[in-house]
Image 1 (spheres, rainbow, N blue to C red):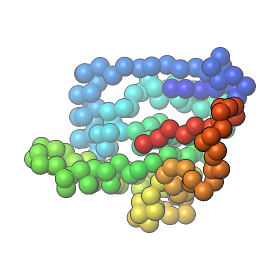
Image 2 (cartoon, helix red, strand yellow):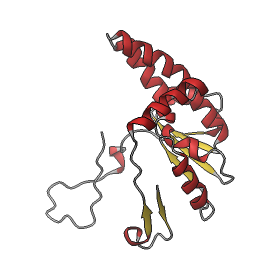
Image 3 (cartoon, rainbow, N blue to C red):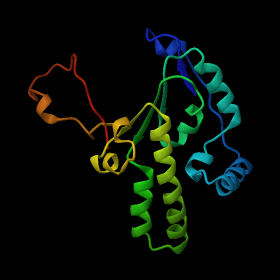
Length: 178
């Protein structure tokens, strides 16, 4: 959980809390995902304690921003503008993994989880005001394309005019990514 009261100095004004997952909670999460059809990736990272804290913090916020499908469950009930960063569709990732793995256990897991994630991602796109995706293919597959904003991967090198021979590193912006 992270929150900032001001953009002036995030390091001093932000609140962060780490909640560790216990093995028994992971077991309950797995059982919850089976009985509710919520994807395991969402159920595993869900905590009622975290939800209470987010609901409390959200009263002071203007917008809810969920980065990754795993955090979207917390924002669904909050009556504020909501944005979900879905990045690369986890459902699509699992679909491809299912086709590539040679392990029968992983094949079963990916097959079940892919179907749940696919439905859940569509539910998130429908529920949230906007969702960010990185791939045109994922946007096209969405039932709610008007709520999806496409953010392409990487940095467009045509926007950068870099003199590599310049000795000074003043005012440089560095991009690190995969």
